Image 1 (cartoon, rainbow, N blue to C red):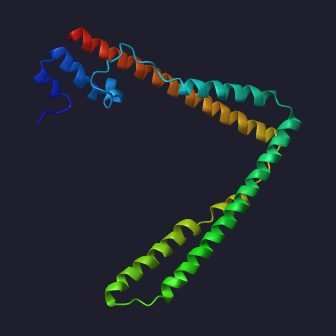
Image 2 (image 1 turned 60 degrees about the vertical axis):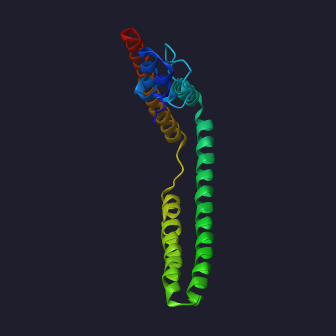
Length: 198
């Protein structure tokens, strides 16, 4: 039975056409593997500009943060702190409400009389599902710990935290954009060398 790559050999395709078709299964052209077989392979692969845009955003944020007054930084710090407090309080309430619902259902499972010995394993399964979900969904202290450890930052502390974050984002985006550019150049070189060899 012919494969996607060998199907056109019967029609008399050339070695070059066959090789370029098979190239879609390899690194340089792997993103084309699901494209129609007659879609031409481009001569040059362009790098994505995703990380370039993220780099520009991080640089813009860094400049903005550095230009903020201390008063504006303190205001932002306070707003961020209050938002975090509300988030963790809501998380605690949500976990408690979910645990309550699980416990009600668990009580119903426990109260249910298994109609036969063959149903006992089913009842155990239902129980285990709920007990496991209580442990996973409601057994942690993430929100309580976060709330306990949360402290408002001074304007200077908040500014430095924001600058550090922006610098980290700048470094990450620059590194990833460089790698993306190198991948695109490598893919372009790979297809150029293949075409030259054919």
